[in-house]
Amino acid sequence: INNVETYANIPGILRNGPDQFAAIGTEKSKGTKVFALAGKINNTGLVEVPMGTTLREIVYDIGGGIPNGKAFKACQTGGPSGG
Image 1 (cartoon, helix red, strand yellow):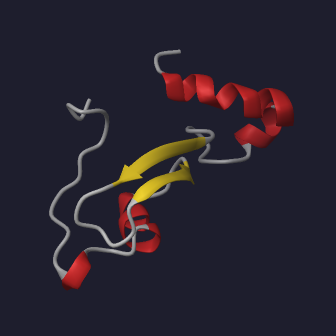
Image 2 (image 1 turned 180 degrees about the vertical axis):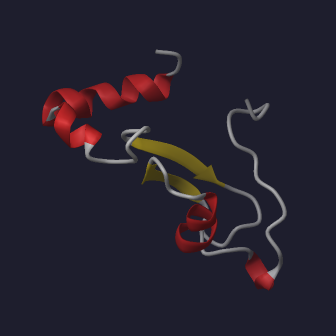
């Protein structure tokens, strides 16, 4: 266990069981992941998606894309330092 997001999964696993948790995500990466959408994106906020969701799906399907039809240039994954 290396971060608070791991701890945040425990109540759901205890409440619903490990099989339900394992049914979400991919074969090798179970569960969900939280992302913060901020900056020049149409729909900002926190989103929780199944593991395996692509950045394209997060930015365009959930985030609504980039304002004014501009190009997507970059994203930062991870904490303040991207790690």
